[in-house]
Amino acid sequence: PITNLIGLIAGSTGTVVNGIVPEGTNSHTYEPPPSAAVNLENADVVFVNGLALDDPTRALAEASSKTALICEISTAILPKTSWIYDFSFPKEAGHPNPHVWTNPPMVLSMLTTIRDVMATVDPANASKYDDNYVKISSVVMQLDAAMKTAVETIPANDRKLLTYHDAYAYFGQHYGFDIIGAIQPASFEEPSPQDIANLITQVKSNAVKAIFGSEVFPSTVLEQIGKETGVRYVDSLRDDDLPGKPGDPDHSWAGLMKFDFVTMVEALGGDAKALKAVNIDTKVPDKANYPQ
Image (cartoon, rainbow, N blue to C red; front, side, top):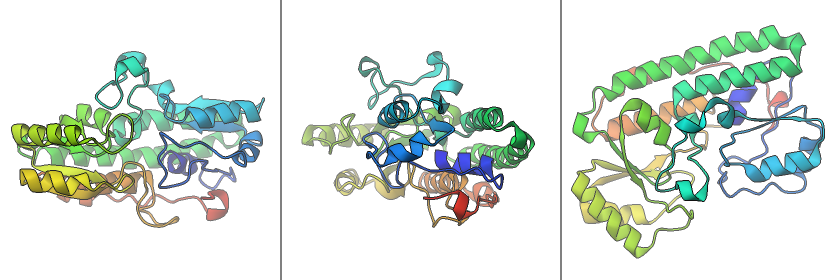
């Protein structure tokens, strides 16, 4: 999603955007291969999420280029007082929850940072970057407004999220969801039998209406928890894997968020009509300027 946001700000300026982390890859554990050093060496700017999510990529960038500007987007926009530590990202481990991109208001700040950095490095195209920013930020704000409308249709007692991967902490804080927990342990391995037993107890005691799985992190424990609790499980939520194919409107940050928001709202008994009405067809860069 971050590669997509940067590509949308770049637009048709001729700026080449290369995504280092392959789609469908676990960003938490991804180690860039030595071949990635070529792209990093020739880059003017290296954008990373920050908040310790992609430290190996940043380390390779620092080793590969002495001239590239390295921007940790989420670290730049989020003061330490707003960092969230939780069950998957405990404070004693020193790594805050890095999933800022699932919260639209924070994405607006990310887009501002991306635009400003690109305009600084490439002032000749500053006005184009700004025009693209205006267009994309409008879609972000529409999704935010539609999500607020949709949340109001979910019974207050059902606004509880139990997900496989812990990707919605900032999202939950903004929209008023109670984040019950995450099925995937902090180690990113499969949960232990004791973990599963505790989650089953938690699901029952909190009257959770749906359990949300992950497209990127498939797990067999979801069915077990669903059967033992009688709770519906939805094994299609996407944390950072863009839907559709490159070039499709849905293959974007906005497409990802719209899909996830609709999935959550409907599974929790709400009305996603406002979300479905949002037009996310923002022009994407040509494939030549946006390699996968």
